[in-house]
Picture 1 (tube, rainbow, N blue to C red):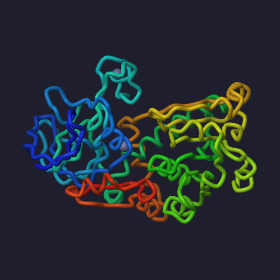
Picture 2 (picture 1 turned 120 degrees about the horizontal axis):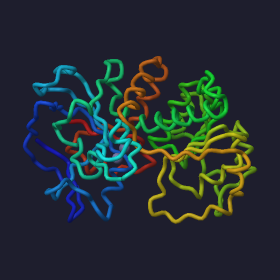
Picture 3 (picture 1 turned 180 degrees about the horizontal axis):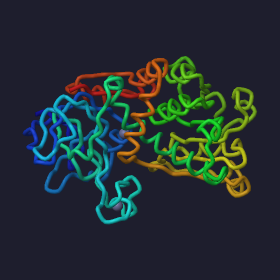
Length: 372
Ligand SMILES: [Zn+2]
Ligand SMILES: [Zn+2]
């Protein structure tokens, strides 16, 4: 079978031919249908240390996948051939409390592995095998966009974590909807994580403002407007030392936010907006700055976090429960929202065109998908 693999020595992607995996009694063989390309994959290409599986010089990349079950181990009775499934990504360390309790996304030792990212082969291959416990069945209504389920879980996890925390600390756990707790939201960064988080929040009837460097005529702006949100082009109010507040205030429909989600990984931009957070609000950080040098203290008074009782919530990865929650959330949406979701996939290319797919620039693509 064909795979797309990264060699740890020459750090280049190549199409390789490998045997189709054999499955054990507790494993399932899946034929890949689509795999998404995300910034993690692009960062791996320039990474200093590529962690391949033990005894292997190549890492098959890809962690956003959807496939069809073609063979099932003898001891499994929950799945059936033909089921469309999405795999989870992280495999726990086995030692910490969280990994022992199906929450490897909260691993405290850092000794987890992730398929296609660190220490385990990924899903950019014609077939992959997986334990039944790491697969989630996709209902037929969602199969068209199932490759977006994994990146959506990242938003779902953080939004619901933030919601539960706010509900508990502000309202003693009283029944409140997500949009009662997060009415106005600012999302910084319109890549797939930012757009999918915006999408989930908009579908929960919140007011979303999304900022990105793309043109207001571009596809990101169109998707945000489709969901009833406001799109702002950062270039119109970005200055050398941060942002021009009066220009931002004149453009933004909302003056205050109950939640900011940073999906840009750029604290030099994200922290410029801290003063627009209401008292008792929350900041969720999903983006990683990588090796970007940052200077942020000049943008806001750090005591703001204290005096406004704000929570800063960092969030990474997602466990099986978040995959199930993502699917049940999407299943409840009507076609208006599902059509918006589909727009986030801007390109579909056959896997043999992977070089072209990886070369697409940020201003021309959101989610690029390889078909198998
Ligand atoms: Zn990803
Ligand atoms: Zn762990």
